[in-house]
Length: 417
Ligand code: HEM
Image (cartoon, rainbow, N blue to C red; front, side, top):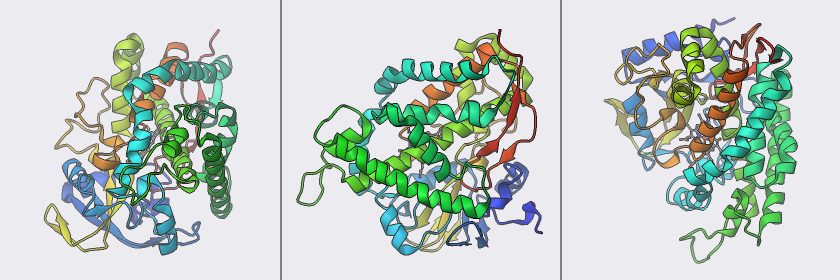
């Protein structure tokens, strides 16, 4: 059996023991880019994963993300694996896999729902959901940090945002199967994921049909009832098909990421008790900084992929047309050129203006404000009520190069009276 430290960083099994921070630091200090060889993932229907360039320094990651004309999201999708060509074409219906100008038109329709003002309006509801989640476990003294704490909130928030709160449980169940966060072997997981992707796509189309013609200010409604400016010869909103892909995107982008950040928050704060005590000493003051530092210290989305549209170079490294280019947030967010003592977790750290964990440029995370409100709300509940919470058993990492996800993490704490 190959040691995980020998595996290509594109290989999902290079992450079974968590983030390979030491290896990434070595690569980052050796150069701005490294070539990661072809590998395979037997759990995929297309098991071959082609090699590509990893970009692991902060400024170089930003340079790639700021140039969508050269570094395309559409040409090979943002996934690290290589979907079959007919799938790539289909997946270009999903916002995150579009290039400008199509991307800008679609993004404009949904962006209005995510403004800081709209998100602030949602804050009381998000806080109530966070309270309910912690109410359920606080008297018990033990819980599964993923199933009981990190997972329940984000999907319920998305269901509210979609204007279908009654479908929260259904969307939660489907998206869990879709991202592989279920207790199943690799093959069963792949099958469940395919089925679930199909289901969520159909559900998105169903919601689109319900919302068409009645703009209630919710997100799918805005998407299908708005007008995509500049679409050739017609004035239309998103099609049912496009809305199906959008729901799928929200279920992955807005679900797994917040879940992962919440779980890591509990782990990291238990590993850095001085920082936890500082946080608890003044929650109002330190929660925003703690959230930003958690996202920096353990980026929920490890990487995003682009494909070179033309021959180019990154920090002097020639890149051929068609090359896979992987922006690695995990390494970039510990780049000592930008962060002093990057391996130290410090909730009072002065952060750069852009939170790179949410990406940069054209595709900068639409849900960043909402993610912050969710993480701030859940941390407030946890650290005002059960502050000594800590992992109390084996932490199981999700084998994937994309997300720093955890499958399970038993936790213990002094029960609330
Ligand atoms: C801690 C939580 C989150 C993290 C770390 C995160 C991270 C990211 C990153 C890095 C991107 C850029 C991808 C790229 O450049 O290809 C992105 C895009 C996106 N995110 Fe998030 N995200 C989070 C939460 C959310 C939430 C809560 C939502 C919605 C409810 C959301 C919706 C989206 C959407 C729709 C996009 C695509 C934007 C576009 O293509 O223009 N995200 N996210």
